[in-house]
Image (cartoon, rainbow, N blue to C red; front, side, top):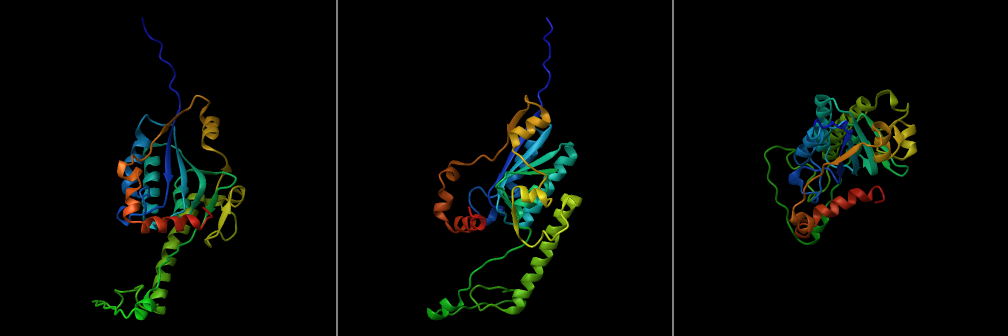
Length: 266
């Protein structure tokens, strides 16, 4: 007896991109996003089961511009090689590097309350020179190269160092702007969207930073039918990470991570 083959159900790979964006060595919490950690997840998501589409579920306040660029470039390369459309679904926040990741998609969707944008570059640090002086501590630094100790937090701020830092930021900001323009094209409104400001929900759609308000399941069903099959691909966390032991040993990255989220009221 010949068994009748059932028609293949459409498949959508779901890939959550949740957390701050930082190099693996940076130690930005157990769930930090970086190219090294995401490479096998993205490769699997675009290949396993021959998906009809990939949906990125983004919830990130940003972080490293280099890691954002590497992850975004990997997504676009896989989309092109596999000829698979990519859709980004912004959750609470897709800001700064988080929005960079969203721009790797063919279309961007938001919730009515999603915070989107922050197309800019920021650098934050502390100055401890007054503290050292009050405590009678002498700072000793020896370099070969006059600019080697630029922005040393244990020395008074040098205006020349600040200007050099701003020049670096201007270059990175220009790259970010080019990335957004290349991705969004003529969908962008004719106004300055690159000041670091953020927009919420429908307003982000109105100015072209997103395509529509919508959620992943109903939209994917609308595109691929009610019988679409969702396949989730995410990181496998160790027992050490699940227990939060890394944060207990070194709480500083966790504090910095929370500060990033706090910029957007979260």
